[in-house]
Amino acid sequence: EQQPDQKSSQTFMGEIEKLQGGQYALITDKSKNAGHYLDDQEQAKKFEGKKVKVTGSLDVASNTIHVMDIRLA
Image 1 (cartoon, rainbow, N blue to C red):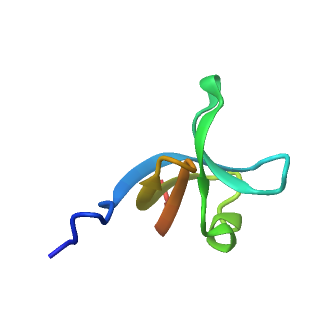
Image 2: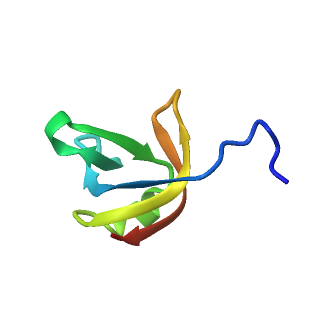
C-alpha cells in the first residue's frame, strides 16, 4: 500500500539530450524546448540522443524526474 505522500510513478516520452551545463535531460517537446531533468545521470548518459520512455516520479518543484527505468521507445 502506497503512502499518501509518495508520488506515483508516471511514464514520460522524449529524447535524452545533454544540456549546456553537461546535465542530461529528457526533452519532451523540442519546439517548445520543454523537458525535465533526470536524477539518474549515469543511466541517462547511455541513451544520449535516443528516443526513450522514462518511468519515474516527477518532482514539480525542481522539474526533476526521479528515474526508476529508462528504455528505448
